[in-house]
Every structure is written in structure tokens, then in C-alpha cells.
Length: 206
Image (cartoon, rainbow, N blue to C red; front, side, top):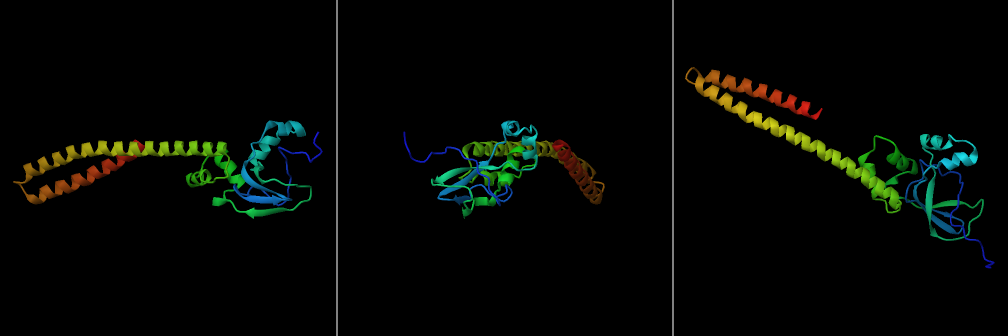
């Protein structure tokens, strides 16, 4: 049996001065001889409430944006209670743990921040994939909306050609009477057509 120090595969660390809305994905910290990198918010488990005898605790952690976070070991080393936690590197995009958690679980996501999230190398693969899926869904909805707009305008353009043809025929038939009357018909008809096109496009998008 080895007499060396025990290897800890998973360690819970409670530290002061590292709130979830300040610590960012990709930041690095030194604790004792070891160095760590922040990889993702902690996924709140119901067992936290069971262990502490407070079943509502997981829901409270989520609603208060205090999930905690996971870190990967960059450099192994010995750590102990009361060791200082020293920040050794910044994370790209300044995406905090709390903001990352909200991007996945809350509505009203900022597309630019989703793109920031998938660009952070330190973010764990599972969260990377989740954000990539959200981006694809968002882009799909945007493309569908754009296609609907183009389709609406194509329908309007078709009716536009018919209306212009009618106006031209009317103007031609009235030309022997007076050119000013013809010009007035084209102007009024064009404005009326433009108003109807705008209303049709807006209606198609509702």
C-alpha cells in the first residue's frame, strides 16, 4: 500500500471573494501549489437540498443566480485550508459564471453573448454544444423570418405589376383629354399602391 498523499479526484472548495457574477469562464486561479481554470457553472442537483434537509435549496440557487462553478486542474499541487486564492489569468469575453448560467436557463438571450460563449476555449464541451444549438435555432428563426419577408414582398411585387399596368392603360386612354389628368392619376395611384404594399408586408409578418 502506498504511503504517499491521497489523490483527490473531486474537491469542493469554499472561498471568499469569488462571487458568480464576478468570476468569469476561462479565468485561472492559483490555490496553494495548484492552478485551476474555470470551465462552467455548476449544474444544481436536487441532492444538495436532500443532503442539507432543505428541498427548496436548488430552486433558490437557480433563482438567485448563484450556481457555483467547476474548475479543471491546470497544474497539480498541494492545497490546504486558508491558502490564498490568487487570480493568475483572465477569461476571454468577460462572461461571468452567473451570465453563462442565465444564457442557458433564462429567456431573452443575447445572441452576441451566445457567440462569445462558444468562442471561449475553456468552456466545457457540453455547454459549448448547448450554446451552439441555441445559436443554430436562433439563426434558423431569423432565416425563416427573412424568407417570409421576401415572400411577402414578392407577392406585393406581383400585384405591383398588375396595378402599374392598369394605371398605364388608364393614363393612355385619358391622354387625349389632358396630360395633366394623366399625370395626376399616375401620382395618386402610385401613392395608394405604396401604402397598400406597406400594409400587406406588415400584415404578413404578424
